[in-house]
Image (cartoon, rainbow, N blue to C red; front, side):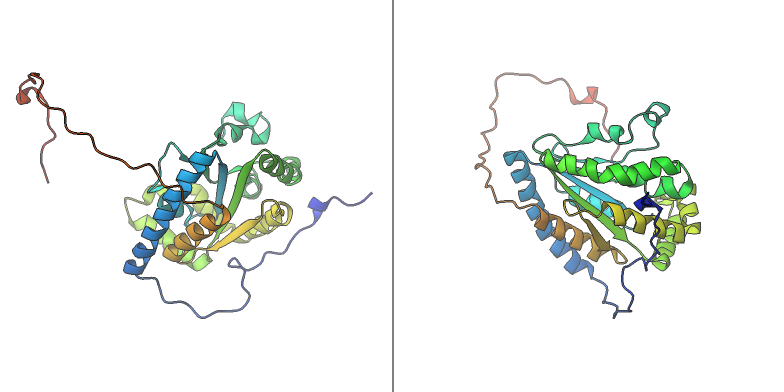
Amino acid sequence: MAKDKTDKLVEPEQENGQAKKTKKKKKLGNETYFKELSKLHVKLAKLQRYIRTEGLKVVVLFEGRDAAGKGGTIKRITEPLNPRVVRVVALGKPTEREQTQWYFQRYVPHLPAAGEMVLFDRSWYNRAGVERVMGFCTDAEYREFLRSCPMFERMLIYSGIILIKYWFSVSAEEQERRFKKRIKDPTRRWKISPMDLESRARWVEYSRAKDQMFLYTDIPQAPWYVVDSNEKKRARLNCIHHLLSKIPYENIEPPPIELPELQGDIGYLRPPIDTQHFVPKVY
């Protein structure tokens, strides 16, 4: 009997996928960053209009190590968009009932209808990453995921869904710098969880899990796209630019808008202003 393919192990590679050292680029300045981001936001608005008009169904997955920059990129994508058209899904720990369901079942209700784009801030790939490394799933469940995930994604694609998968790659040094910054900043302290700290202690195990995941789920119909996220600004711009390139869209001009004239006096008498409760003008 042939040995099951999932018995093979892939040696972890360098996280940024490059064996050779390359010359470090100068950090992107704020002026250039916001100028380019503004241009991309206009294009995202056009993409949104096209998705809505043409009834496209788009799913974008954001995966990667903790503090790799997934959340920040998602925020920059959704910033100029309508939340009724572009939704973010970030599921928490599964309930007891969900743990007894078909694994992909809890994600299916969040898939888009026609005219929608859904961004998954972590997705069904939790099983191949966190659950695998932390022992939250059995070996049998893990193997079944590697077997069935490509089939599940092909089903989504054959049903008309556009599926795009991003892996945000960050070095150990940069992750440590970001963790320390979060620990010192009271507004970001909530971003550090015991699971995040444990993930650093298991850096190599996570590397192996990621490589194994890529081996089985980097399929032609839905390949993985790696984002070098050691510099957040460049990572955000590069990811948005790439996302726009993966969804062919046309610029559909919206109909012209004319503001109606303000309604004139019709004899309505408003109640006294001192009957209302106003927010104090502290600033």
